Amino acid sequence: MRLHNYEVPCAVCRTSQFSTVLMIPARSECYQGWQKAYHGELVSGYYEHNAASQYICLDDNPHISGTKSDKNGKLLYWVRAWCGSLPCPPYENDALLTCVVCLK
Image (cartoon, rainbow, N blue to C red; front, side):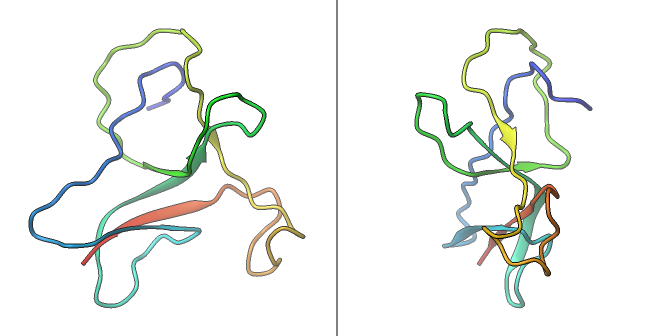
């Protein structure tokens, strides 16, 4: 499902079974000993926009509430790898970065 102009699905993890929640950029799987909550694409606000932003792991299979409007509030953009800022290889220039949320 395309997410353009939909409300951003909640990306906050809360669990009573695990003491640590970790988002790892540029990975699709957790390290050994960790349990995967979900994986997806790394997104962030645009660097030239006024509001502060942080990187968010947007689930590949998000639960969409069904509400849709075009209010141009806080916009999110997919994060891409750029050679020079990141070593290539293993990264591929101009490729979208994946992410995984892990529990322990």
